[in-house]
Length: 336
Image 1 (cartoon, helix red, strand yellow):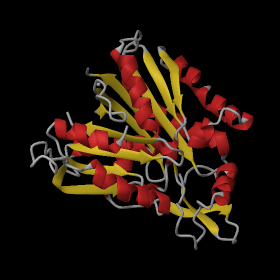
Image 2 (tube, one colour):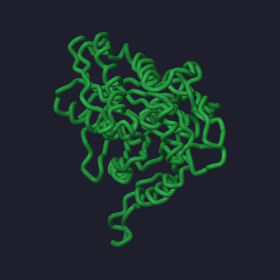
Image 3 (cartoon, one colour):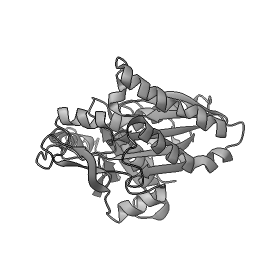
Image 4 (cartoon, one colour):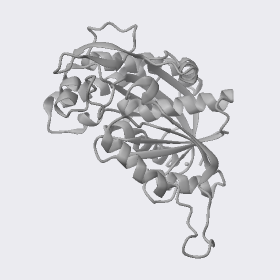
């Protein structure tokens, strides 16, 4: 897995050694991949109503109680997901030092909002409990940039592992639309699908985690350029496109630039093929709803499962996320 930030050089590569996922489709990484491949979806009526009386559609974990909302729901999502990598964490040994990086919703980034600060503190407080069961875990970084969070989180993890301060890193992402405050914010910003406004999205919820180690380790254009340098033109992409007009417009502008091969001004001398002859493009919100901060990490889980199971048959995948804040992220996953 290579991480590229902006137009800078790639950081040392990271290897994914274990994954976990909880969302409206599945309770493990294997479930998530299987139901995604089966083209199932988790859409259902939520307890929340829009201003026009329409019962808001969401993609929710059906086994969670409807009254479980807010930070309590987020902590349960995190706990159920991190528990899935308990055995790989134990296998690292008692002396292993493991950095924990949390990926959270973009609205939790505001340091001036005391209520949001309390939510972040509750989520960060989960890590000492994990460390009781797996000594050596310590929280090193929190990225609250929504859909694009994973790229920055992996950048941070790569720097720690390259400096040999830690033996592994646990990157855990969580987000949920099943929250009165989140719903109210989406209504006020006209982002919530109400049965009539098609320039909107359907919220989802989920958590996903990656346990990564170093092998020696963003923007979409930098990732496709790096793929070309590896002589692996991108053949599969996993993204977070929704029906929101601003997001659609951004992809329409970004994709041609990301795959621009060069060579137009020098008679083809600088031509490098960035895209395969046939590129498969999938968008996670079509199955899971908008997973927010858990989007890119869930995509990495699906790609990892696909590499192991051979379906889809690609051996590398470009993952990208666009947050509602200016943050943008992209990661290139390459099968071992």
